[in-house]
Image (cartoon, rainbow, N blue to C red; front, side):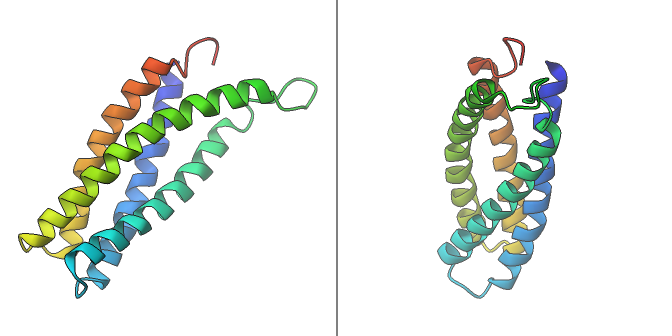
Length: 147
């Protein structure tokens, strides 16, 4: 069970690391845009990179978990786990998005460099995201019941 939490958090952190780097570059490249546009475009890029990396890593870590001895996929277990994971991530994503957008916009309005506003807002929001995600994963018992 602890190993599953560690894999999930490893995937989340690796995906955020990739999205932080790319988002900072995009924020810098768009630094001549209005603060709300820079923040919005950077957040969109953040999501594209994050979900691309996370999905790939999560698949690689769990591709054998749902295979039956017959070679078929245990679709019941897969659907059950995906519902819990999507619920957990969905709630955490809403909080993350609001915090990240508000923080980056705030940092831009107080004249942080665009790349720094992106990095700092994303780092703070990532910590909040991880706390919420892990709490909800525990509440939904994603890694209980033999998972």
